[in-house]
Amino acid sequence: MLLTIVAGVIVLSVLIIVHELGHFFAAKATGVWVEEFGIGFPPRLYGRKWGDTIYSINWIPFGGFNKISGEVDPKAPRALAARGYAVRLLVLSGGIITNLILPFILLSVAFMIPHDVLEGKVVIEEVASGSPAEISGLRVGDTILTVDGREVQSVGDLARFTQLRLGAEVAIDVRRADASLETVRLVPRWRYPAGQGPMGIRSRTLDPVIIRESLPFWRAVPVGARTCIETLVLSKNGITEMINGMIPFQPSGPVSIVQVAGEVAHTGISPLLELTAFISIAVAITQIIPFPALDGGRLIFLFLEWVRRGKRVSPRTEGIIHSIGFFILLALMLLVTYQDIIRWVSGESLLP
Image (cartoon, rainbow, N blue to C red; front, side, top):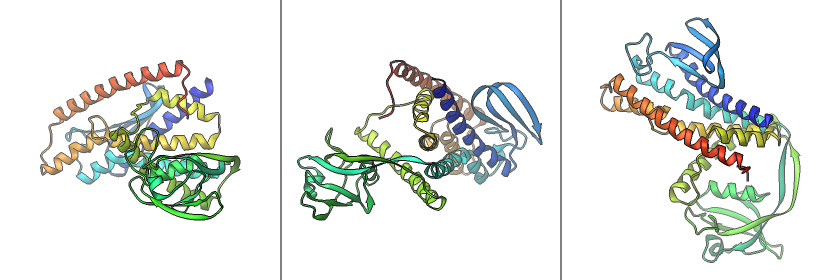
């Protein structure tokens, strides 16, 4: 339990602090006044002023915050709202940018640290009637070797490569039961009957072997970059599938992050770094949503001002809208947290 809590607090804090550092560095670089940068949340435990900014450590040990002058009021000293569109766009987007940079760094490091990799043969056990797999000629007993030239060593690999190419043609190299090799082409579908999946097959990994692997720096960096980009694509496709009703919408909050981080921490540093990277991408995507109080909501007001050729929404009105949005988000967070606590207390794991 202690490891779970510590790992969860560290993961949450890193994600929030990195997000706030993005806003902080963007504001500092453009001359916008950052009144305070804090680690944790008030009440304040310790604070010291360097230059024109107070740097504080606070009692509530989750993440951090920026107090940036004039986020909505252009009359405040060295106000953000008084700056041009480019500066405000950079400062408001700074957190999202750093939440997208962090996964690249974490994944690169994760691949350099020794970690477990599952290897085996992926064999088709069932082909659904009328599915893309049946139409393309895939058969029960086929061993899937590659998808678009990428080696398939587990059912997880196959699912990942398939999800990356939803709606697009893929080339699949297979070994038939008679040992002959063949390449088939199909289009994984966005919508499919329950239990069939995008291709319409059920498969399993035969002769699985777990090996320890660590990549050298010159390989880990490009693999980390590719994995980061692919995770963005998978996130986009997952959102589309939720909208289509293909996968359920299961909101998770801080308690779930703590629970999952604790479970993953028991498996090693590399998986924990990968988890933190994936959550960071999720945070970036969430912050892009054009909802009041989120970065995306603030960017909407900037866009409206640009469309209206410099005519602003009044600071008072914008502040009220963001406050309402904040309380709505807080209410939703409390509801999700309650559900997360019930799930955790019941002993339900969030890991597959």
